[in-house]
Length: 71
Image (cartoon, rainbow, N blue to C red; front, side, top):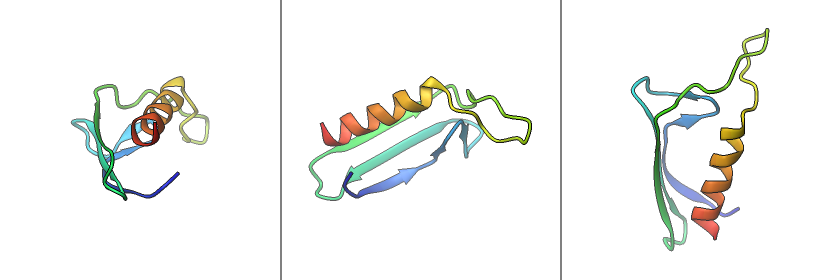
């Protein structure tokens, strides 16, 4: 994928900010922009060592970002 610039306050399974998770990015060539907000923030369950486990929402968001930014 190409380079994206913007604000990314979302990380796998947990929002950095307690009140919500959002992402706003612009493609490096300026041809596409995207902004998304997520209400459900902590969908990943933790394994015994405290690491977030994959959840279908992770893959869905990654697909959404890719399609929105690259078609």
